[in-house]
Length: 283
Image (cartoon, rainbow, N blue to C red):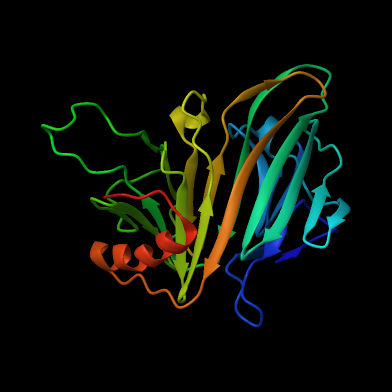
């Protein structure tokens, strides 16, 4: 793992020693917002949801404070941004995984409602894997299983989206310039991304009584061309001045994993991951 100190907080590389970076890098992409010039850069970052220009797009183009708490733990702390928020990522490397604690502190003079939003830009031309709730027949259960949310620019007939009985897949495809996005209330609490024989997995919580943004999403997935983000979100919280909210993720990276093209081959590839990573099971 490589983090930056001159911008951030950002994680810019996650990969095997001597291997390719599983995170995507976008150094030249930028936009001008009400809060200043936001540079996409790539890698993993921390935002505030819901996506409002005056709340979310505080630039993170400047240096961060680095606190080395132990040989395997460090903290990256951003100065208060243009939205009046202080963002921090606490990283622990432990037993083959990375544990990330994201923290946002309200440094405004008034309360603010927000949710911590952890966004990971992935290396392009891979496939995001979102687990489905356990399948039950019509006579077993009449109630809905989970939220599935689309955006105004989401085309559910998009060939990059594949709905299956066990998973939903979202591919990034070079040349597919139209953006698309899907979100879920994911009670199983994990998602994955497969690219070039590697499988990236992130776990995140589902708080049953939490009030999530974007019509109840705790994970979202966005793609445009070879760009693809795997995002997790915490519940909304109203923060008084000086108060903070936290959101945790745990990451793994597995090598020599080929998911194939069928739902059966994806499930076969995931079985080994479940056994070693203790992911929530589907039947």
